[in-house]
Length: 428
Image 1 (cartoon, rainbow, N blue to C red):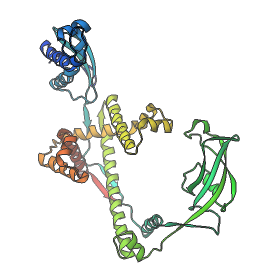
Image 2 (image 1 turned 180 degrees about the vertical axis):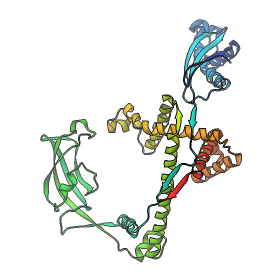
Image 3 (image 1 turned 180 degrees about the horizontal axis):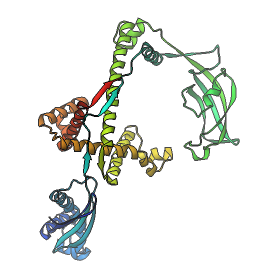
Image 4 (image 1 turned 90 degrees about the vertical axis):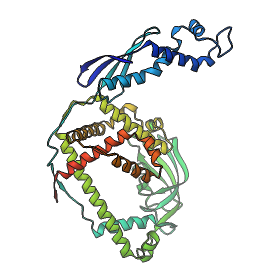
């Protein structure tokens, strides 16, 4: 491989011209022939036994060129980028210029590189820290939530349905007196007030009694997922079969024993308050950190290539896909369900992606300016921390996360610490 030329096309954009010699190309062609010959039929030869010259004569000299090029060009490109001392931030655009068996091949690669960044006034940033006080009422609200989670449903026969009850109903939906798909169910359990059904439905079930038959008149939202029902008025013919109310436990020492490791309600409340105060402190610290970083990127100047933002959006979409897969769904099904084209879906990440790119660039520049370094002891300790948190072997973690990426992330975290350590933070 040889780097023939480096041409700066624009800010953050370079064109590399790269040559792969005939000898390397020839060896890759031989390798491609050996990998594919068993699948090739040549008259007069047993399958898999035809000489390379005969295969090339029958199918053309370039029959193995594509496989050979694919074998060689990634390494050739990587070497050229390293030789040109470019920090590429997006997948290069490759264009093959010439391919000759006797001369090798030549190609160009358009590379988008990391922009020049200037960051100033990142020390001495002023901000205010506000820690939300945790009141007895906040603790009581948390206790009430625990009480609701530990409630049980009991049959109600002496009153009408009310908000918070779970009712068992039949319903049959009509639009313009015509039944529609998905609008019918029998013995359906619905918690009133949960917002599970379209607006207005649950409220009209309240006040009804067991055995009562009634109509519920609603209007589908304009953004409803089913195109044929958007904004349409509908009538649901309903019958109420059962009403189940929540029976809440008494809030006392026995309740504390049932829901926690504590023997008394006083101990449980004290623990809840301590954890809420810890959370409030963390939220305040996070808010300070976000404010400081926002101030830093406001003082940053850089011509950020759009490709960097697009690459970050790609990462975010992939992360979203992984989360969907863990729930048994794929991105195509999700987009179909929401009625959102992929381009519109990607646009939902644009602002967040652009900000994350700015933050990363600013912090990496601070790492450079402050000559922040990471020792292998720091790296190994962090690998171990990740391994412990995921209950994995540390060597397996290392196989997932390249040490170079890990080191960069640790350096960026140190840059954040530096900003915080040098900030002027007043307590509100």
